[in-house]
Length: 136
Image (cartoon, rainbow, N blue to C red):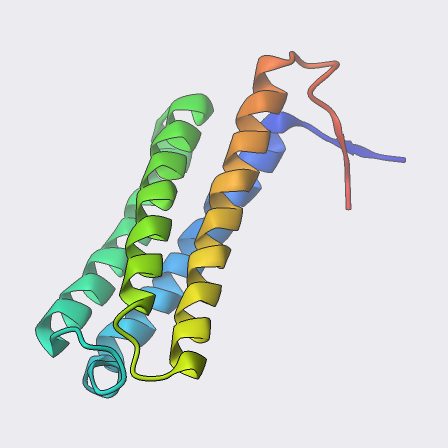
């Protein structure tokens, strides 16, 4: 059975997080008028949020290339925890239960990225031999 190191897990987590943010950011910015119709948030706020999230994706990729992996993981995990709370709060403004569930699903996605980053940080702390996790 092959193993994946904490560093490899961290890099994959950050890269997938960046891809998710890019896709979600572009979608939110492009669909801001439609989204504003189903959540009680201003269209300009939604558009701006989408742009910021897309730019954040590029920053996360930059962190993977230029920063120590532990620091990058900690920073991105912190932002993901904050984003989870903000997205969950946005679900409270939804016009229907179905929309609220969809928004909460996005909050769960972001929380799972934070969890994967926490797992990678823990694996990095354990050292090279103990940091190995089963590869999927």
